Length: 316
Image 1 (cartoon, helix red, strand yellow):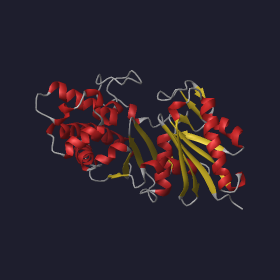
Image 2 (cartoon, rainbow, N blue to C red):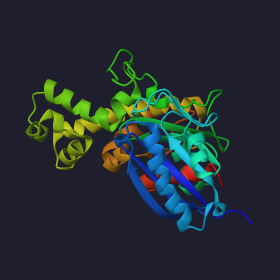
Image 3 (cartoon, rainbow, N blue to C red):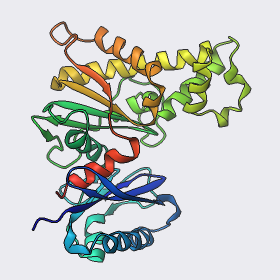
Image 4 (spheres, one colour):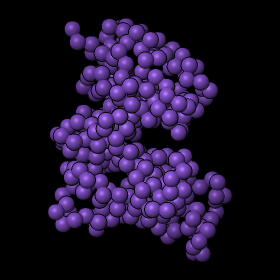
């Protein structure tokens, strides 16, 4: 009989979320540990597996699980390794899938975290009947998963689809993690929103409630709160961010002609503040043959669920 459950794991720079999932996409149980509190990957794996053992026992033992799927930054689906992830403590190449398989005795697969989110959307979200779409994750960074003809694009080495690191402003803002200048992630992430707000405060003399905050305490949430209360400068931050994101999305549309682009992650909570300027900018920068063809939507999945669901789909 086919195993009824899988475990999905979403590894982030700050937290690692995981849960038991049914094949129909119901998360029956979730838990969380703090990724950044472990100085070595061995300590992390030991703690994570202690939690996984409890889940496995709770749902009837290892034979009830089709496998363990993992979404991780710089995850390589071909090797099962995390390779040189800039936002994790553990450097170099980490054969995480193998380490967890050895500990649990359960079949384990790993892929890039944004790809896992895209797979989750494709199987359980608003793109279930769509074969060509791009998912853009707008969080601390900008990730992406590209689906063409129902298949995730991973390239010859497992690392295709790093759209957040494409250069959208040559010679522009420095990205501290990569040393590159002008990448999309430098502008269209939560970090980018904060940096844009600080630049405007420094260079624009207009009064703003943003000036009531210490610069080091400004976050994308602070900018959002000021914007919804009518602050001109804060609203301009989202206009600028949407303009750049829309330009980038137009480039991506003309590359792969998707039916839909799905935005996912914390920054999408800004709603129309980010969606309206993004949609306007995207359409303004498309060739006529692409205009008004591509749907732009916010993911239908809960932020904490998409990567867990996508990771579990790797093994079902």
